[in-house]
Figure (spheres, helix red, strand yellow):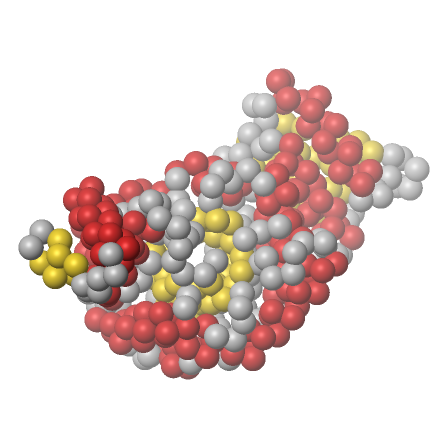
Length: 293
Length: 90
């Protein structure tokens, strides 16, 4: 199972961040060709990102590129430039239509085939930044086997919902719930949007704990200082791991003896509890399995 | 005189300015920045190699460096040359 607790955005025209971002230890990096790059710099950023990708020095990070939206003139050149470098995935902004994902799947296959990269290698991460995109979350997540995650937008989504940012982001409660539900129904990850205030660790922790409780697997971050906070929330504690081990071992023992239910510390443990314990061990890197990709 | 530029003076970056020269004048490269003393030769080679790969024979290049390594320098040279040629896609 690929941990996606944090994805660090790296501005596509900033050599310092592009070359050093992975050193801060996020689970993934997002080399950003979209909002972080001025229109007049799209060309230079694309060349720089291509060369940084070719160097390929990202440690264990999952490497993705946020391309420009499929409603712009840039997206095709973006994927033609970065996909042959052998990236793990692309992040598509403002996805609204499952047909666009099918179209992207086909375009990626052609590029991979031409570049002699295994067809299907490049995963798709969908940013759902409009009400329509969120409404169609399940169909979008199922539009291609490449889809690894769906992610709610932040400011764009607020604008489309004709609302503003509140202290606790109450306006995004519904969309986040819908995305968590759609992601798990479709068998992909639900990854949360960024927390914009990079000086407010307590707020970041509160929001991260909340989205974890909703069923999200991780969160995008915009500053290296946010990584330890998000990792701390999404990483099982030693106590949780110990308990999970006990449950999984007891369940295995019961299964070997042909028993359905089992007791751990005086409590009956049934299938969903075992499943959750297995998931805890997967997230701790102690058990294989989990979601696709 | 036709000219084009790419890059910034942020840390680990450089500004590359290319200016047209008369045909047959060849390539001239001027560099400034703190790293030139130590890495000047390597930067010169990186720039020449990139121009050669892009098929550029006559051009004047000015580099203002703020700690860009070879990778960034090459990317900025390519971007400047492509802008000079009016081709904004790699």
